[in-house]
Length: 322
Image 1 (cartoon, rainbow, N blue to C red):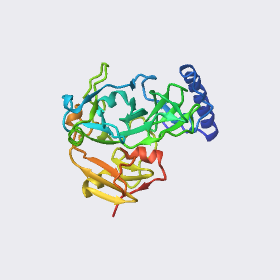
Image 2 (image 1 turned 45 degrees about the vertical axis):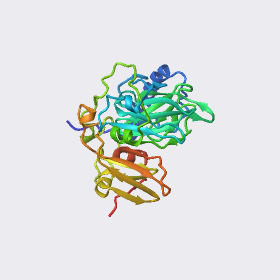
Image 3 (image 1 turned 120 degrees about the vertical axis):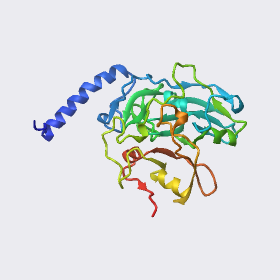
């Protein structure tokens, strides 16, 4: 049987009909969301297979002192947030994998610590926009396989990888990013023996288990139909993104430290992949990185999959070295 090929005009008509059929469902589920105000096409957004808040965010998390934490393995990943003048906080990936967003307040500053497993993207944002404090939840939708967040104050949708409002009242707004980094539990507790670590949420989840077994070794991302990265880079290869530049983690592991484009990126062994084996603690060692400027200050960055960088920064620079 020959494949069905639609004429351009008919394809456009069917796409419009599809969107029309899709939008009423969204209107019913999202009565406070202004779908006419958007910066992206609605056709780019698709369901991830769970409803709104089917992956529940965490609000006002409890914390333990480092010496009180006994559940984490030395190689397990944590997201470190160290605001000036505040006790550092670690947010274990074993919890973020199942909740994806933590709404916290640190030293009076409202923050959102986020993790999208499908893109391996961990970012933190200031939750204030024009003086208004927002609380974020998981919409259940994806764009380029990346988490689409929503805020409970306006019902607007936000792209986790970029911190940009994409649909609703807040479309076009940008969340201020806060420097964080992923490191092993051993690295964190050695650096911050008097630090804090997020306690286990009061939810029925198999914390410590990876629901995406073997994902970072797959050939294609989940629910992604965009282009592969250039230069023969595998879609699920990790890269370090700083702005619109991407350094392959493979290069960093080989060179250990790189100073280019005004940043210094260092690599060290000892951190397990959260998207490899069924037990997060048993994942293969992918190493951990720090990104600093010429003055030694930590910089906003992301360790994400190559396909996601190419999808959101199609004109970005690939720092491949010689």
